[in-house]
Length: 293
Image 1 (cartoon, one colour):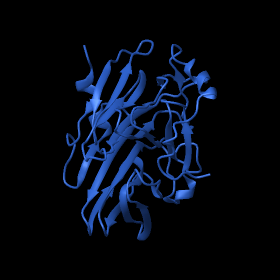
Image 2: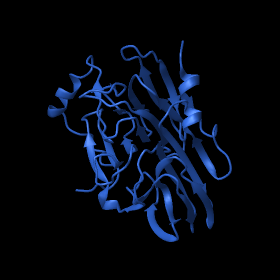
Image 3: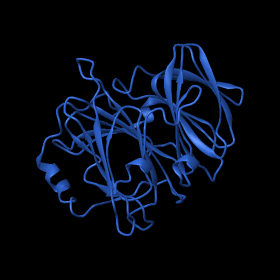
Image 4: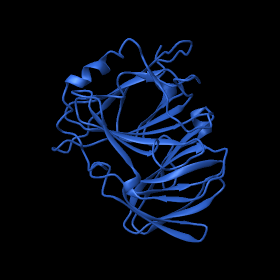
């Protein structure tokens, strides 16, 4: 029997006030990862409390001013996720702050339960680690905001992935549900956006999760813009972009390890595919946005 109803959260299901999305740790039914998306009209503001979580204010569309501890931080942002990477800010736990957007915009607040107190930190766009991963129809662009870069977090890992239409992303399927030398236990949220086609129509993507040893789960879901899939365990992938429709997803990961490290293992049935990438060109549609050197 499918687990889609348990792990797929549709756009608007958690919306309230100016929050388009508010996936709490409690709503997800786990211990670490959370995500809010704040939508502000021009001139609007929202006060936010981080509570027991650390988080980023990460623009999806537009720029903002973040006021925290009586100091204003100007976040330039970007026109959209399809045009550029962005600057952002790290907010520690037990902090009240205000997000104000003069021209309006949409702002992701990926979060994790924190166990350390770290300082507020503005992160310029040149600190984003960008890369192309895979080859052929497994090619995608990866932008790391809190993963493998200079930002120190307590437990939070954040990255975004851009996948051209028709490509298979998050592939080969992989897992991170054990703590050992090759893996870390990481709860993961996938938040999706799908770029409209040139004729203005909206498309879909497909997300798969299946069992890893001793951890039963079965998700195979059609997803659309602003949907989420939560992944407590299991092999996840592929994330398939329908032909004609580019796929974006924001990954929010966190778990109990204190080293803020992303370690995973591929499904051994599919791991051989990586060996073929050396002889295959990267999709020429990539990169989809400017990248850092």
